Amino acid sequence: MQKSVGPPKRDEAYNFAYLDEQTKRMVRRALLKAVAVPGYQVPFGSREMPLARGWGTGGIQVTASVIGPDDTLKVIDQGADDTTNAVSIRRFFARVAGVATTEATGEASIIQTRHRIPEAPLRAGQILVYQVPQPEPLRKLEPKEAETRKMHAWGDYGLMHVRLYEDIARFGRVATTYSYPVLVNGRYVMSPSPIPKFDNPKLGMCAALQLFGAGREKRIYAIPPWTEVKSLDFDDHPFEVQTWDEPCALCGAADSYLDEVITDDKGSRMFVCSDSHYCEERRAAGHVGRLLGSETGQKLTGGAKE
Amino acid sequence: MSAPLDSAAKVATGADGDAPLLTATGVTRFYGERIGCEDVSFDLWPGEVLGIVGESGSGKSTLLRCLAGLDRPTSGRIGFRDGSRVTPDIFALDEQRRRALMRTAWGIVHQNPRDGLRMGVSAGGNIGERLIDRGDRHYGNIRVAAVDWLQRVEIDPARIDDRPTQFSGGMQQRLQIARVLVSEPKLVYMDEPTGGLDVSVQARLLDLLRALVRDLGLAAIIVTHDLAVARLLTDRLMVMRRGRVVEEGLTDQVLDDPQHPYTQLLTASVLAA
Ligand SMILES: Nc1ncnc2c1ncn2[C@@H]1O[C@H](COP(=O)(O)OP(=O)(O)O)[C@@H](O)[C@H]1O
Ligand SMILES: [Mg+2]
Ligand SMILES: [Zn+2]
Image 1 (tube, each protein chain N blue to C red):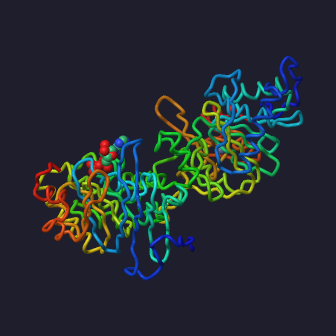
Image 2 (spheres, rainbow over the protein chains, first blue to last red; image 1 turned 30 degrees about the vertical axis):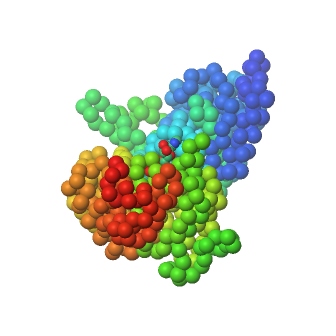
Image 3 (cartoon, rainbow over the protein chains, first blue to last red; image 1 turned 180 degrees about the vertical axis):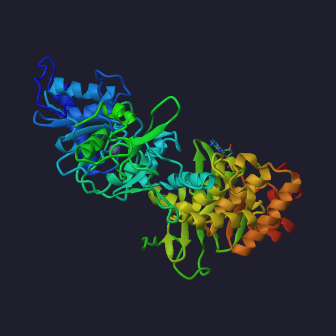
């Protein structure tokens, strides 16, 4: 599998990175404001993109506005580089911006993501761009936009904890596993987009810049590097991430987010890293999971490697 | 935390009991041309229970909504004192600070429990919200307080995880009272708290309210068109007519020896209240 692709030739029929310069400036202004007020949702004039909504048009507009010819782009969807969504966004930018692309987290200067944060720690200078379907963390509790705006303005977030209270009362624990709300910089409650709560601890004190784009809802928000991000909880029911009883069946990682994979029609299953690049890198470094050499393992890794 | 002391305000610093809790000065509210209430002034002292009576449309609810910070008066001032912290006019505060005060210093019991409860949240969550708003972040403590308050308002604590929609009207009203009192306000506003309930349910609720107000040393302002409710719960009475206060005094005095002809008609039950 080819990991990195050098800069292809840009399609001159389009403006660099598809959006016109004025639109990019408008998005950048919104981004600057978002960075200045961490966790605050900045409205922006979202544009039509040559991809259906729900395909991450918010994230694409953010990426298009920050990308330069020297950037190297990685795109992941649920942790994987090779899904239809990830592949088409990567191809899109290779064509309209002529940028190099990669699957290696460490080599990318911009990573656009849907539903995951890479397992490998990000470094200073990298930008993580999230595709966000619903930016408003209070929407489920308060349908009126005018009200949620006031709640944010006044830091009136008691209702969020009422929701957590209801979960604990009903299920004995907070049942929310995705889009788990966070408090950014001690001020704004923010939706981290539908990442698993497993990834929440990576949001805080991160060396990279994190940008969030919601196309349909026309909102942009940000977490600047080294910002405090706290997952909401109760003192006696502290925030906890998901854990698994077994490590990754392919690479043996015990510290990564695992997806359940059904391996045959008899219902056999195994757990493997959702971050496909992380898993590959570990295998390349000689880590071996329980099923790596097996028939099922070979099917999943695309044949015996090495 | 020293709010500027308005020299014109009657509120003054001092130990609890030395000064009024609430001071209304010329409170007036118009609805367009129509008068809601006009030029109402009075002091409310800590621990005092004031009744507002008058026939339907006399301005009782309008006045109460102004006092409670829900509606801005057209003119006039509402001062509030919380210990040594004095607010000369609650409507001079920005909305955020006024909301904070409304959540901690006083509570409002609405006539319709639906206006005061979250119907989609459990009984425990309804009581807990006030504590969460106050900054409590310990689930176990919130739970204990919710159980305690359910018992105090005579709701079976086993119902803690049920939603108010599964409760009778009387239970909903008692839950609303628990939700308001759990955060230990200094003052409670009630607009026809027993309205819309069966007579026997009303009696039980009145007994409960009376005991709670007495035990907690609460100040309260209770709007009612029912003079029996006023007699049972209040120390002092204001009689309203066409938006104005026409008579005020100790409850027994006003009811047994009314001075104003309108009050005489009211107490003689000539007017349909
Ligand atoms: N929202 C409103 N808009 C217009 N007029 C109102 C409104 N609320 C009350 N009023 C009028 O103000 C007067 C006092 O009403 P209200 O305070 O509801 O009296 P009470 O509670 O004593 O029955 C009445 O004439 C009433 O019609
Ligand atoms: Mg009324
Ligand atoms: Zn793995």
